[in-house]
Image 1 (cartoon, rainbow, N blue to C red):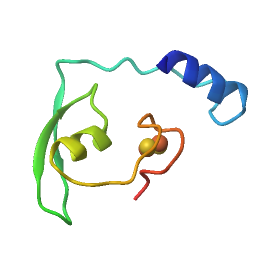
Image 2 (tube, protein in one colour; image 1 turned 180 degrees about the vertical axis):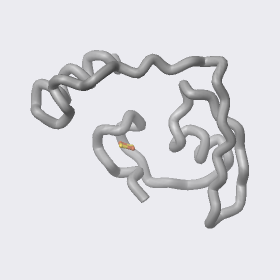
Image 3 (cartoon, protein in one colour; image 1 turned 60 degrees about the vertical axis):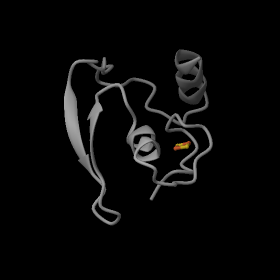
Image 4 (cartoon, rainbow, N blue to C red; image 1 turned 60 degrees about the horizontal axis):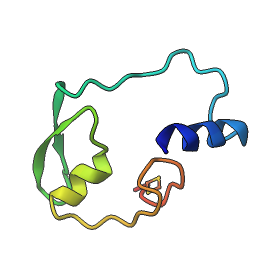
Length: 75
Ligand code: FES
């Protein structure tokens, strides 16, 4: 489903049709995410979205597609 959404977004001109490279997330790579305004610090994997990490931390952020296309979660 994700690949289809990306292809659709590229076809509609919403994404760079010729990206320099595709990034392949590494499930083993982790990073610390600090939600500075609300306080939680969480560890996420490269395969997690910041939105998902925020939701897992109990933070409420408006969202719709949960995929990075609609900008509903943009803060
Ligand atoms: S919910 Fe974040 S871009 Fe759609």
